[in-house]
Length: 136
Image 1 (cartoon, helix red, strand yellow):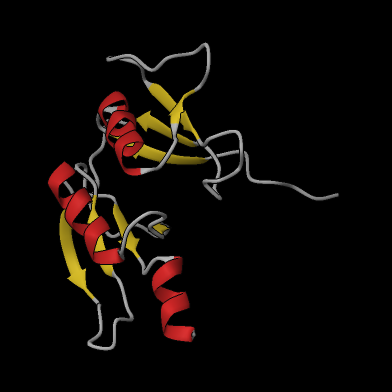
Image 2: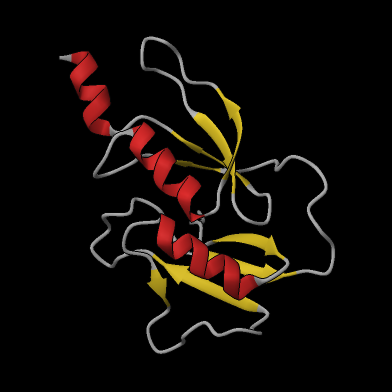
């Protein structure tokens, strides 16, 4: 017997606002077809494009009464698909992310740790194109 990951659940203060914010960050993510997320919903799921181009599964934002108090034990590592790491960092900062820990290196390696509007950590890595340029 084996299992597969159905989705990743993220505790939220405002599930709808979180789902809307992450749809702006993640290329092609949408509400579940036929089941739109709306303000006041306790659970809001967003799904990747059906062509598999996102490389990840659905995200479910669930409203919980308690706030975030400590560093996440699990987080998303994002790899830009159509721009550089630093261009993507600027884009998500403009959407309301907060920079937490800059682990970028002078040689172009590394990443930046950020937080979404509710404080959940995530990282932005170099794009595949940036990695290929270094390795060629």
